[in-house]
Amino acid sequence: MQYHDLSRGSPRRVLSPHLQIYRLPLTALLSISHRITGMILVLGFITLNGLLVSAAVAPEWFVQFTGYLAHPVGRTLGIALIASINLHLVHGIRHVIWDLGIGFSPQRLQWMAWMEIAATASLTLAMIFVPALRCAPGG
Amino acid sequence: METPKRMPGARMEWMLERLTAVLLLPLVLWLTAYLPMLPGLDHAQFLQWLHQPAHAAAIRVLILMGALHAVLGIRNILLDYVATPTPRGLVLLFALIVLCLAALAGILAVMVLNQGG
Image (tube, rainbow over all chains, first blue to last red; front, side, top):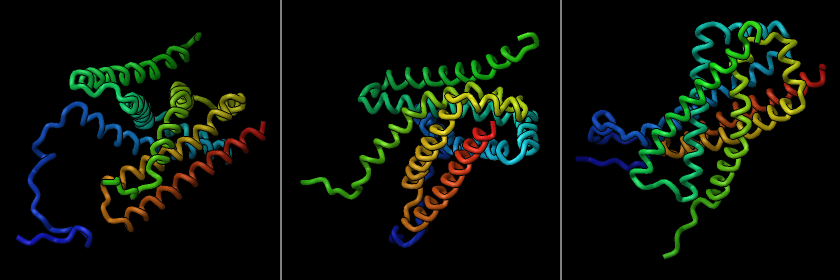
């Protein structure tokens, strides 16, 4: 079997199946989710700056932009963005806790993973429904 | 055996990533709490919201820290998945340009909006 030098571009080599057959533990799923939500947040960051630019350049652009955000598809993407922000934020706090050397035992890892999911869900629901209650007629 | 020092900037990068994260934590919570409400505002209401000094300052700091945190995060992703230095550097440069332009545009927009009222 020929082995290629890895420094000269992509080699052709035989790989055993791994991600296709292995069920990732919860901590691993949250880890890759932290990375994926980070990339989603980059798009959210660019969108936020686009919203500010649209407001500064022309009010009608801003109205059009917010019109897209208020559309059901826009609202769904907005909820997904809020959930991504919360997941990335909560997992980031967990990283800082790990940096202090806390929480590496298997039981604690599992417990913290479930706490993370609960915190993300709670924050997301609170952020979606509390403003809605504030904007209710008469409120 | 002495550990070879191949990444002299690694400690600074690690610190910056944590520092920006800690600074972003309250700002992101604050902005995310307002996010569901923002699309429902008209232009005048949005300006009124942004003209509050705390909001204007918070948005500016959030944009700056967010751009830096994003660049550091993208660099970490590229270091993990792109083995060859040249494509990795080019993608990182592209991301850096896009994020810097977005941040600059956002901050200039906030400055223009705050001068208008």
